[in-house]
Structures are given as structure tokens and as C-alpha cells.
Image 1 (cartoon, rainbow, N blue to C red):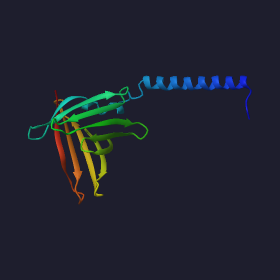
Image 2: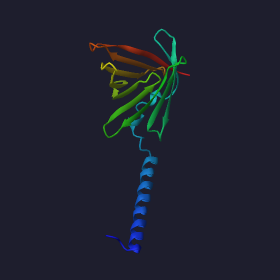
Image 3: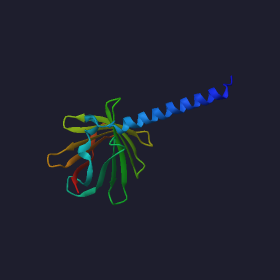
Image 4: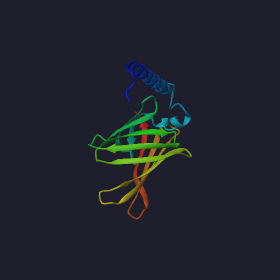
Amino acid sequence: MTLPEPILHRCTRLLLGVAVAAAAGFSGAAAAGACDAGEHRQFDFWLGQWNVHTPDGKLAGVNAITREYGGCVLHERYATGRGYSGESLNIYDAGRKVWHQTWVDSAGTLLLLEGGWRGSSMVLEGKTTGADGVVVAHRITWTPNTDGSVRQHWESTDEQGRWSTAFDGKYTKK
């Protein structure tokens, strides 16, 4: 069926108007602070420019965590200065009420973590599968300290499922 040209033009204008209004409404909602709720601010203690040290005091690397995309995403950029670097995107998924992190690095690692605030720490967990098929569980805990520093404790499982520390770092502001 073919619509007469005047009706076709009116329908086209109407649909275009609806699309423009919908787009304006959507962007207006985002601009109104879609990520201002308290849950979206739970990881804000990690924002900043950091030096990261191992428990024995050696500099492990530097890390910059910034808020992006209207305050909805925390973007981490980590570098050791010795050839290794990586970054993560972190977001609170309000629909599922969970924090999500996607980590990628110069070693080809893709790590997907999820979790949330537990007690006085942010705890995210996930699994990776190596090329050999071995599944490793990961748990990373970020704890803000009273002096403004942050402890990041990364634990992983071995082939028997036993947890051990993969990385233990203290973040101090630059």
C-alpha cells in the first residue's frame, strides 16, 4: 500500500518530531545527573593521582583515576614505567545494583569483575580462563584508610582453588 504524498510527508514530519523529542528527553535525563545517587559515588575515594607502593615500600607504579561520562564512569590508567600498563572502566549498574569493572592491559589480560561495598571496602570478583583452560578466580578489595591512602589487595586462586595474594598495593596521593 502506498500512502498519498501529503499524508506521507505529515507522517514523516511527525515521526521526525517524536524522534527529536525523544532524543532531547533522553539527553536531558542524562544531563540531570543520572549517576548522582549515593551508590554511584561509593568508589569516589579512589579518584585522584596516585603513587602505588608494594608492602616493602617499593614503587610499583602510578595510577590516575578520573570521573568521566557525566560522572557515571571511573576510568583508571595504571603504568609501572617498566613496560607494563593497563586501564579499567568502572561503573555502577543501577539496574542490577552491582559495581562492574573491565580491566585490560599490555599483557593481553581481560578481567571482568563485579561486586560492591562490603563493610568498609569495595570488593569486586571475577574469573579468567587461561589459554590452557585453567579457570582462576580473582577478588580485588579496595579499602580507604583514615590517612587518605587506599589499600588494594588482589587475591587469586591456584589450580587447587587456594587463595593467595597476587598484588598488595598502597595508594598515596601524588
